[in-house]
Amino acid sequence: MRLLVFGGSSFVGRAVVTEALSRGHAVTTFNRGRSGLDVPGVEAVRGDRARDEDIGVLAGRTLDAAIDVSGLVPAHVRRSSRALAGTVPFYAYVSSVSAYRYGDSEPADEDAPLHEGRATEDGEPTDYSAYGRRKSGCELAVHQAFPADSVLIVRPGSIIGPHDNLGHLPWWLCRISRGGTVLAPEDPGRVIQLIDARDLAAFVVGRVEEQSGGTFNTVVDAPTSTMGDLLDECVATTGARASLVWVDETFLAAHSAQPWYEVPLWLPDTADFRAVWAVPGSAAAAAGLNCRPLDQSVHDTWSWLQSGGTVRTLPGLPAVGMNPEKEKRLLAAWLGRRA
Ligand SMILES: NC(=O)c1ccc[n+]([C@@H]2O[C@H](COP(=O)([O-])OP(=O)(O)OC[C@H]3O[C@@H](n4cnc5c(N)ncnc54)[C@H](OP(=O)(O)O)[C@@H]3O)[C@@H](O)[C@H]2O)c1
Image 1: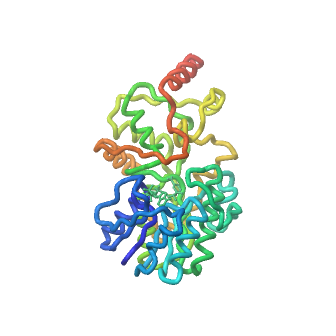
Image 2 (image 1 turned 45 degrees about the horizontal axis):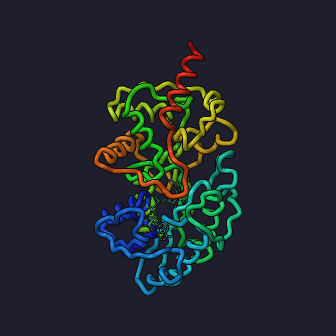
Image 3 (image 1 turned 120 degrees about the vertical axis):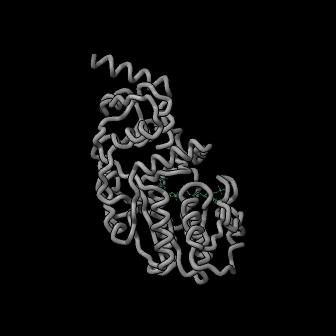
């Protein structure tokens, strides 16, 4: 097939391109040439999707499908989907579970209400303050340009794997590899729901090959891996002399440890966040989404880091990870409290 990938040079897009090339497809990528190196073997077209004239260079190409990985702004997705409608038969869009209105507080299947997105909303892709609303607006933009059965929408939860550009798992691997006493956020038994970018990519490319539309939560269905499994695996994989000290989350909150970015992948077990790791994934599983075991993702991410891979974090997002002084201070307070 002849596939056009919007993005394709950083993380998820890179995995999609790598998967498509490995299946023998011809891949054109469209990006500005800033975020990463193109995967060898692609035809790289340079352009900014915020600009009509740049998207215009794609006109007149014969393509079997477009895969839009990089859409964060509805007006950008509207521009690209409208430009291709009528000539390209299929459009796949990588959305997010953040598009759900109550996604963090109630488990959301694919029919749950979305944020009130607008297909025309414009702005800077680096503004993540309305991320969920914008992802919903991007979905709308695709649906307005293409017939329903020619649209694939995937809504991943949190994504991990080599080339990670959010940096949460890489941070844990690097922190744990330094060894010593490591602050870990209780509860080690808390189930987490992480998908490997390569599994997501295989699902997307498979559906695109079949020109099979639909909307799917692309998450591990009924996950069983826990935060404890993840951090234990980081210890095993790095071979570090590290001991995890699980610190109560009420204590963390009281000492202004910030969930998610400062303590990567930690979400307090409160009503606000309870549904984040409990997204129903049965529809995608039935449609062929296969998720590899967590230890493989941890291992391969560490191999990537060891071979010189660096996290090219996305502009506009907060720094990831707790600084070492604060970690020491919190550990001393926690251990002192228990003595
Ligand atoms: N990571 C997660 O945990 C997670 C979870 C749920 C959903 N998602 C979604 O998954 C997708 C992941 O994206 P990714 O960063 O991994 O994808 P990617 O396709 O690997 O990288 C982003 C691409 O977008 C290109 N790009 C950015 N701004 C552009 C512009 N103005 N014009 C043209 N190209 C532009 C970048 O290249 P240049 O900068 O060189 O232009 C880069 O190639 C996103 O849509 C995100 O919302 C991610």
